[in-house]
Length: 527
Image (cartoon, rainbow, N blue to C red):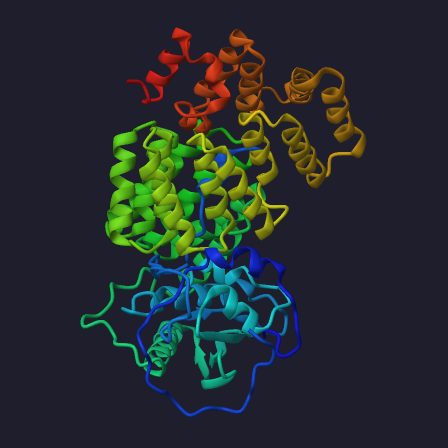
């Protein structure tokens, strides 16, 4: 369980506290009898990697986040449940239960819930309950554990009021797996009763999870591997999603998970071809929507496919808008919609969506990185650099943040800083120190052009897998013919990186060439 007592300083709390915007002003009545357990301690370079936020395993809705201030009495963070099983092999189940509870509680009017990514940010970290609550700006914390043996589960859960450190209540549920949904509902109802919140006047939307417990567990396993974000993990996730579908052919969320795996593979694995995986993704997502047309995740995922593969900007915007309509307080549709708006040159609208995604999920590295990319695309380089530096504070090894800092520094003409950021990321990627030093030497000897040529030499062996990077480097050097040759390879592979073409400063040297206007037209971004 989470740490009690003792000071465990979290430096990031002070740096990102201004981002954390949960709260409210409704008073809450006293609830339940108080226990005596007191909680101690004072309170590769690719923008597409940031396109994919983390969906909850169950319901997609997330709570809106008002301005930062004192935590609302009706605010609660659901911490990742701890796997207490003897073999410690039920992490996927504990995570899935946590996400399902977040989804259920977000349907309660007036109850403020940090999004999944922000709650899971603390998983495995040495932090007290008070520190977590301070970072997330919540008045209550729900924590629990799962012990699973065969078809039997024991779920222990307790609700903590952070200000006093006392339990509002604790419960233990011993059930079989077929009762899992009933247990989740009971826990959610107990939270609502304790916080004196008012339940919906009508029942919440039907569950998106399969009522087949085996299919549900297979889906949770797939979702667990999908969240790990690597080619190998995506392929594992595909197998579990396919098994879930075999158990329940009408499991819309499993089809959505399958589609998202196929969509992400070409982004994370440069040996995977979008021309092969994206049609599979589209088939799966259309099946999901045929089963459940009110599934926000599915509309957002279809929007992404239409944007980054079909280059159907009108259709993609329609799907993103529908996803936002169905789940207005979920960060992912806002983030993806913001990317589309920025990529089409609608900067103010896009940045508003990007900022809202960060407000809804303030500790999400994905949402923060995406906002940095949007600011860079909007030519607001100083803000982009600041935003990307904040992202580094959330996780210094996360998905190419230094590479994106390199682009922002380069666009601003801060070449020394750009080279330093690039070298930092190469070192984090495990590149030998001698190779990293070679980039510094090239810059010292021949300035910016020397560094660009050194990068080109290091990438040419990768061929089409590095087509976008090579095109941008040649464009920065002013070698237009080579830049267009590599961009044509991107187009032949239906590269998602072309979605940034209209606003990408790396290609400014190409804009006066008729070939650039022709390429923009072919990707649906021409006038």
